Image 1: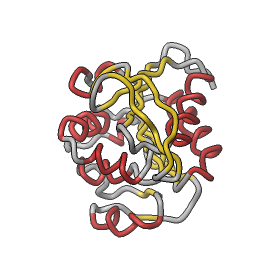
Image 2: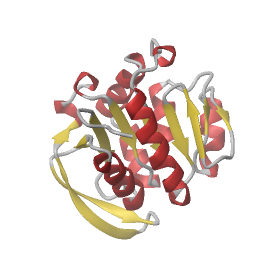
Image 3: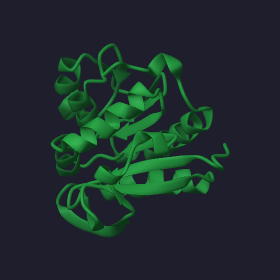
Length: 189
């Protein structure tokens, strides 16, 4: 799949985003030719984590959420990490940014605890998703139908459970980003 000309946003939370769930999708999308913008809650560097507790590498934040709009991108990746996903869903600007991708029917890839952000954005009603098993009830309470599969695609929304699912997740987000908009995905969230 060729993503040349596509602009993809990837979220990162300081001291909380799970490194492989950030780095592998970023590499996959860039490897397919897309331009990736790292979007954080604050400017500067954002340190990732491994297994939620161990320090990971630091990555440069290209833009803050406050300086971005979904209009500037063709797709979005939301990595997991328990602490990272919690920080993202607690930030209203991030939640609004995520919601805009759905109202514009743009493809979104979300892994592990990342779907917490979707629940907060109110975009899960009637969707079939997967995630890290411990947040199943949260997603069902937000209106989603939860399934235990390595990757689930629902009208442009790609979800996966954990780092072990990264090969399937990365392949599917590249495929969905190549396809582009999904008019049936649009929500008036």
